[in-house]
Length: 128
Image (cartoon, rainbow, N blue to C red; front, top):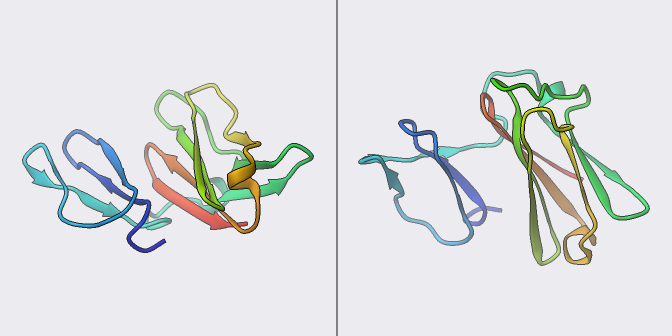
């Protein structure tokens, strides 16, 4: 996905920006934004790497082989499925299950990439 769907974070206000296509230097709060590389933080992989599961309706993405916490101070903010010609995102909040089911035909066909964003440990992804 080089050059497409890259994530950048402002270290001051913690805003996260997804670049759909292109490049350049992004800035926020009068400072350059930091590129977020998937799985770059030191954290438990078994609780952060998305797990892709085919279902009768489409594709379910669970965050972690061991369910990720969904607490006020530590949760998965969003889960995203990229496939075919689509990118679908589900936003989560504390108390929700750390998972999302996608039923859209355009992103559930062929090879997919599942991505998740933890408010403390950043961006994680897996091909499924």
